[in-house]
Every structure is written in structure tokens, then in C-alpha cells.
Image (cartoon, rainbow, N blue to C red; front, side):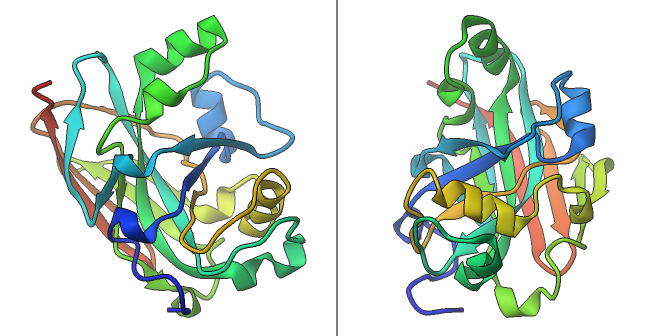
Length: 221
């Protein structure tokens, strides 16, 4: 692991969580939305992190919460205006990531033309696995990615299906904001996002990166 970033296992290690929307064509299709021509980003708060798995708490404000499995890039260095050809040198490692989404709240936000913050930002809505060093992943664009819910496969794809590859994502993000050591970039999800309910058991595997396991429960308040 490069200096300046420890394993993404706690909020103290993470500067910001930058997520990519609709970065797999099959997911854009299942959502009924067009394939983007440029990367689309949104932020999650670091308080949403659930390090190394644990229990995802479903908020009473939502009646439909879904899980999306993603490859997360952990930055070991930052910058602004980073060219794509230099982007990979910023990466310290990779993790398995769940983008948990209150889908009904997101749908309402879309109808109202409002931001997605309420749909994406609840506590525990960003589970993340331990980080594997970047040098141990020879090609992050050729990794099998799979999600099981209660032992049944719900997502089964490969990171080669990304529309925008990691260097382009870093380049585009750094044109908007200064990237920092400790940033997490969640690179998008393939088709097969799945609704979750209390009592569910989630297990996601990304080839060469690791496994992320979570349980699901209702939040009391």
C-alpha cells in the first residue's frame, strides 16, 4: 500500500466517496435511462461507510431499498486536472463496495428534479471491504463481479463491461474537484440490482479483490 492511505476500513481514512452513475450499459437499460456520453458523478457522505461489512440499516423513510455491487478505487495520491494517461499512478488499491440506494426516494427526487442525496446518503449505505493493494490487481477492467442475496446469484458480470474505464473516471472527476489521498471512487454497477429487506444476507465477490458480506436490518429511528 502506498504511503498516506491505510486500508479503507474507517471514516478517518476516507476523504470523500465519489460514485459513478450508469457506468454499465445493461444497468442503464434496466433503470430505463440513457447510456451517458460523459461520466456522471454523485457523492456519498463518509458517515454512510460500513467498513468490512456489517449490518445495513433500512430507514423508515423508504419502502424500497436496493443493493448495487461495485468495484471501488482507493486513491493513494490526489490532484486536479489529472490526464487519463497519468491517472492509474494515483491508485493505492481496490475494494468491493455496495452502493445502497433508497430507490423510491431516488425516483421521487428525479420527478422533482432534486438531488439524490436522501436516496444515497443514509448511515450504513456505503459498505466497503478491506483494500487490496493496486499492484496485486493486474487489470481492474477484467474482473468477475458477482452478488448473492440469501445464496442466490443476483448480479453476475465483469468489470470489462464498464462504459468509462478508471483512467477516464479519474480524469473527469479531477476536472470537477481536487482529488485527495483517501478518496473512494465507486465505479458503477452492472445489471441485476436487487431489493433488500430485513433478514437478508448479502455476499459480493470481485475477482482478485475480495469479498464483502453484510446483513440487513430495520433501523429503529
